[in-house]
Image (tube, rainbow, N blue to C red; front, side, top):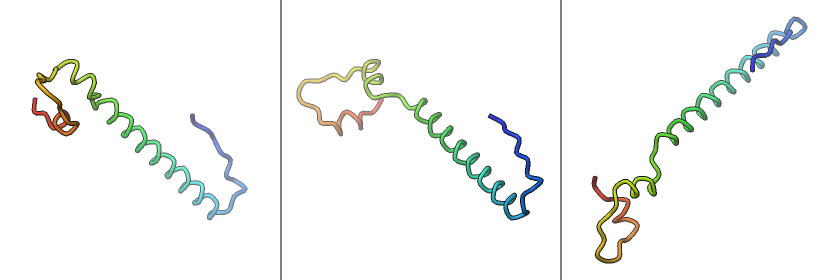
Length: 70
């Protein structure tokens, strides 16, 4: 959403403060977008195990499941 703000009646310090706030929100949005992108690319363990089932002949610990190679 792009908004136009009339800053003609504002003092230079107020304009600088608005620019800083806008920059902070842009950075926050960029970080959130990157985090969401990273989460979307990370495969869920259940999906991974469904595609690559583990041969089990006994009890497996969580560490053995998560540390499994290939």
